[in-house]
Length: 157
Image 1 (cartoon, one colour):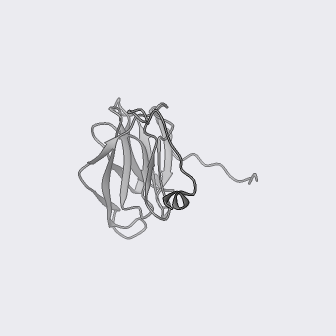
Image 2: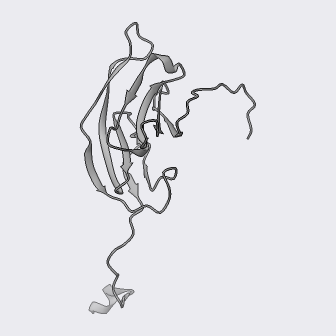
Image 3: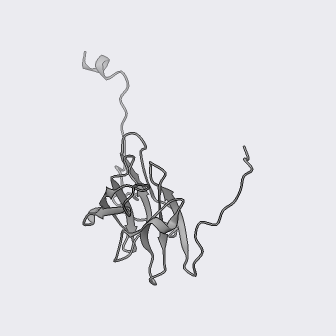
């Protein structure tokens, strides 16, 4: 289905900004930008970008996703690691105060080998469960021979 509507410019900079993800509440937008020379994850207020800008990573980060609650941000680093940081609103978007957030220390989760680029996610997070599904190649070979026994209960007698 195609919906016609008005197109509004959200942001216009010289940086490469990509892979946008709306916060579950819809009032924040997370994306990756190379404005510093390396990709970093940032969050801005949405749709009014002037209300707040919040750097999430400082040592590189891309392919970020919100968890279903919006309390965690997951992201990849160039050394093929999956990380997460806590994300807490201190004051809300749309309140009388300037919106502020608290970002926790990055927490390493696991190594992820990905075969894409900085625009294709090798992982996903369940919208309800919060479970993480990751594409990890199997590094050890499986068994050379697999024996399947049907009706094993009948074999005991």
